[in-house]
Length: 140
Image (tube, rainbow, N blue to C red; front, side, top):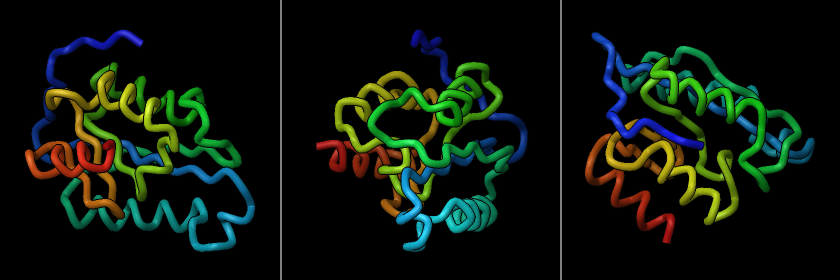
């Protein structure tokens, strides 16, 4: 996916983000990782951080084995169209479980401050140096 390398400009006021939630099995939904629980965490996190959560994209019952998931692709397309400046997830494994896919995702959408990636659980915030360092450590 080609990406304009221009930094995604922030709108006046808060940073506009898209929440992304995913579960692949019913078992996950029963163990506290339900879509509803993830959405509640994202809404609380966005409110606490002063983020404008413009919508939440959902991929229910889809594996993280590929980045080709409808909800994730809609969220990434919104970054490409400058409708939002970032994506927020409860945990990075909601995006992918593949190191290669994760590196590709970061390179295509979150490198050099073009957009921000926020993860509640891992305390990742790529809008600052510490968050980018944490992300690099986690990717390693």
